[in-house]
Length: 131
Figure 1 (cartoon, one colour):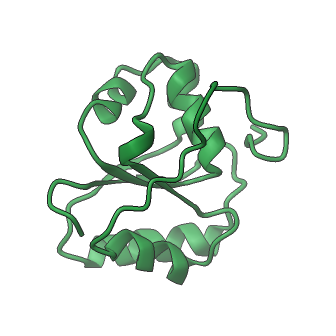
Figure 2 (cartoon, helix red, strand yellow; figure 1 turned 90 degrees about the vertical axis):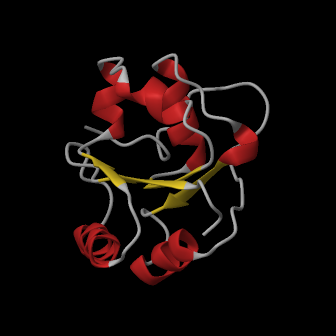
Figure 3 (cartoon, one colour; figure 1 turned 90 degrees about the horizontal axis):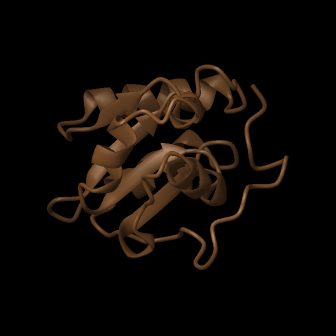
């Protein structure tokens, strides 16, 4: 992992759209590693409340986020007035990737930014979790 890259894990507690087994396995592997990470209950809920933690998270430099669709995560931070840096953010989609794929990417020393560029638009209904 590149020096200074932070890891953020979203438990997607309220939306419950991420397979439970994927969330559990990713969290277990993060917890068993010697790598510091931050876990939050639900980015959707934090965005809805305009939680000030999102601004701190978005301004802290390079970050890998294990959560949902990259476009949805970008929109959630933007909606909370805490935009993520496109060049230094990698989102690992636990809705579509396996736990092995997510943790391999999290523990990889490189960072592969994958937020969509351009205008922030609301995600499609498929991309945005349904509460």
